[in-house]
Image 1 (cartoon, rainbow, N blue to C red):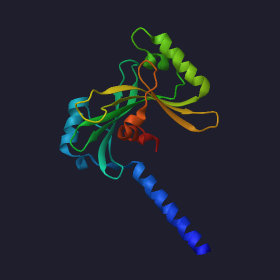
Image 2 (image 1 turned 90 degrees about the vertical axis):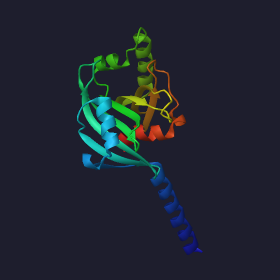
Image 3 (image 1 turned 60 degrees about the vertical axis):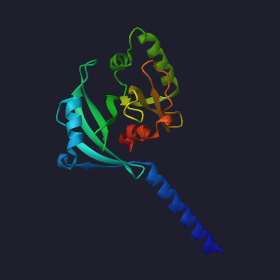
Amino acid sequence: MKSKIISLSVCFCLVLMNIQAQIGPKSSKIDANKVPQAIRTAFMNNVGMEPVTWFKMVVNNKQVRYVVAYEKLNNASGKLLSYRDRYDEAGNFTSSSEYRGNGSNNEDLRIYLGTGGVENDVYERFNKLLKEYKLISFEGFTIVPGKQQEKSFGGHRFVLQDKEKQKVVKYFDSNMKEINMTKYPIRLIELEEMDK
């Protein structure tokens, strides 16, 4: 009887590990010469600069993404920021992240949160969020929802910590209205690859 329980427990653990492995992305650093030419060309056409580092990411054990890390001057803040752009195997842009810091500089927050004419309202919504959570990191993001003909959109991504010290990630549009990213599961995995 004990051996059956142990066997069932081991099987259950293996199933759970397999499910977890399928959900999370597997990412590894690669040389630029291992990146398909279509993707390198797409990046150069979109950004026009040399990449710093390339990664190959596999999502759900089947969808390949090429991730390029680079630094670029942010026009709003005048600061050099870290970016990560993601492309599918055909060279189509799928998503981008712009690391804006940990929120320690209040002026940076105002610059990045500012939107045409509603800056104070947006900043008030952000301050309301900070009453519930501690800010760990602050990023901008852009995604193409699924099919390339769909309109891309972006906003703010906040990595937060709740009162129980648990990590919480929230996505907002430029007006600080929360976005339900579960509608875009693959893009959600892409945007969270830096957190692993």
